[in-house]
Length: 280
Image (cartoon, rainbow, N blue to C red; front, side):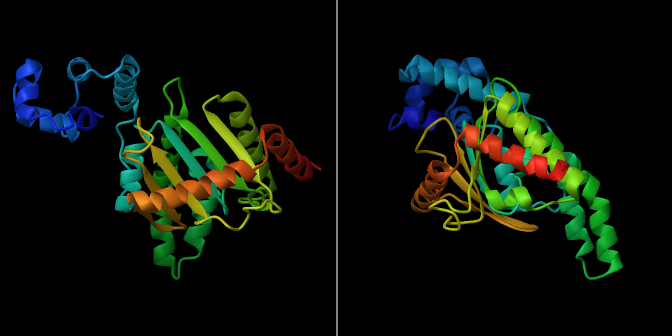
């Protein structure tokens, strides 16, 4: 936002007009997130640029969200793409997700997430590798649970998730764990206003036509700048896309999936049907 509003203005001119910055080097560090940003300085700068009040407020809200975000880091061994995803999540205004194989990580219960991680550990070729993965499991599990706190509170990003209907039938961890997971999805969809969940039926027009089976879009303050797509590869490092042309294609795919998915009422009905089957 700071770069966008400065435009073609020379840094020296800006510093002369906004003496709080002291030097062009300090302004550069602010524009490139190379230093902790002081809200009063950011606001002074945006006022000088003539930014509308709504954009100034949004910038300060973004800084507040980042300050409230946990100070912990992803577990050792996390891919660079995932680390970048985690860093961007706390600053995102909107997060859109599609999942074809599992419940999205940000919506998983502890039991469901643990079952997924243990299943991967058991597939390792020897006892040594299995023990290594089991040792790392608790750290990764705790990180996943803490990461979900990003969706709490009034400043949480808007989170939209489309889940393929087949996920509702895949019992990760057995009937009890899976039932708990489906009930949790019901709960967040009903009681967390910043989370919007939709189920994509197997008969939907776009079912099976997604550009990727597990993708996440993050959008910052601006609809067209700073967006990125994260493509999750199961149990392997994901891929981060920043090319605008590629992002537009994946955004179109996500939009199609959202339009073709069930509405909230039908989504809640489907969840309850699967819960009833597990309870019967």
